[in-house]
Amino acid sequence: MRVSVLGSGSRGNAILVVAGHTRLLVDAGFSGRDLARRLDAVGVDADEVDGVVITHDHGDHTKGMGVFARRHGTPLHMTRPTREACAKLLRGGEEVHEYRPGRVFHVGDVRVEPFITVHDAVDPVGVALVDECTGHRLGVATDLGRPTAQIRHALGACDLLILEANHDEVLLHTSPYPVSVKRRIASSHGHLSNQAAARFAVDLLHPRLAGVILAHLSDACNRPELAREVVAEALSRAGWTGYLAVADQDEPTRLLEPDRLRARNGPGQLSFL
Image 1 (cartoon, rainbow, N blue to C red):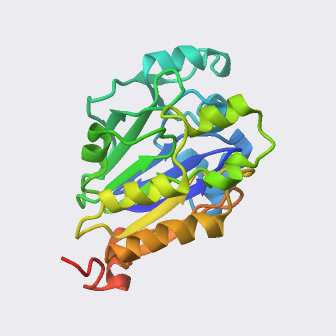
Image 2 (tube, rainbow, N blue to C red):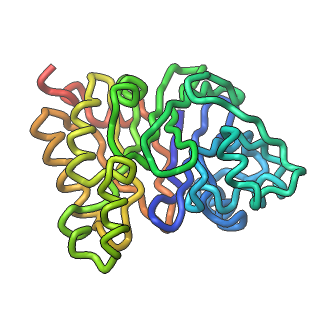
């Protein structure tokens, strides 16, 4: 398995997963042209993408899905309520497959395990993606008001995690947002703060976790160095010395491979075990 966060933040989100002969996108929150540019930057032709899994209806996750699907003949996968909420982005000629949270489906060599999340969208889900060739497991939870037992279970055995660290609590409090928006972001149906992300990341530690990528940082209420510092400190106290990075809004991460990250970190990756 190889993974690149093509971009993540308030202005758009998309993740590329390469497993066996399959290339899969999770979300398509950039224009069709920009998605193709970002894919090209990591060596993937947009026409080679085998499917797009949409996690929820917000525009920063769906903006380019219709154009991309029509332009490249790429199947879309989403829940029925999300499809209905995104009707204006679709013209009817796209190949759309509906899935239900809790029911596994496959896109080529990737097993997709969607699970219900807590967020202020019509039908929000997170996903765990398993490379059927290697068994590697990726967990994606980028819009998450609060962790639940079900979410912890779904993400508890991943080789790689892409986890929201949306805002710094002080920066959110002092931001120019209206009070109603601040309350929504900080609510149990909003987004995880750096501190909440740090606690959740520690909860998800296990011996095979090779890397954590922090994602969906707010432009107005967070800074990459703040997010990384808070989460790194918590993981370090827990004895974890694995790969930690912050996804950028404007450029893709390099393609990350769990085994290479694990080899880079060595046997002391989870030193207390």
